[in-house]
Image 1: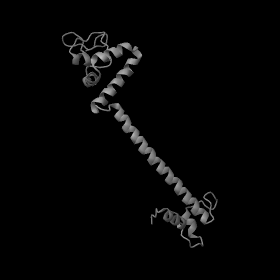
Image 2: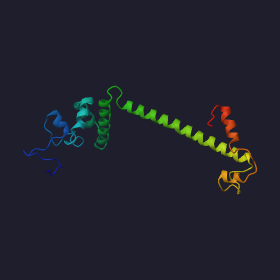
Image 3: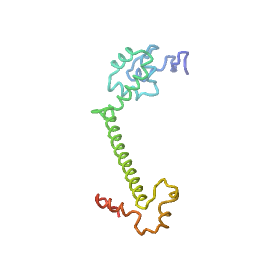
Image 4: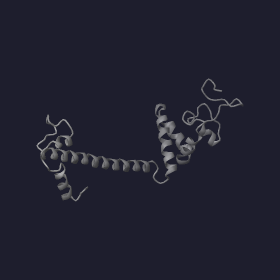
Length: 173
């Protein structure tokens, strides 16, 4: 059951303590700086923050901040505390470093894929030019293999590609 000020009442008539006051085993008054940010049903949230930063330090930090910044500050403290509990040495810097490594790896994979696309386009353009075709010419509306079927040339379509690949040592045949 909630009272007019939004706090839950216990069976004895007093307000239910927030997670911070519950952990610290103290009375949770209406002026409790922790109550809006550490609800009683999320005790783990304050436990990690208390373990890493200490209740007194968190209390001082919150009191020094304007009300509109406290929610963001608590979110940051909770994130850093949880990261520090998972990785006591690096904390959230370890998570950031791991994400940066993933970004670097994905950027490398993207660059390789883009280079492969360019390489395939160059090969396709070279194949078309070997047969006097242009990828944008009006007679080039069907697939390359269907156009070349009627061609009188006996050269294989990918002859140049094989030479280029063998010269580079990348023979895929």
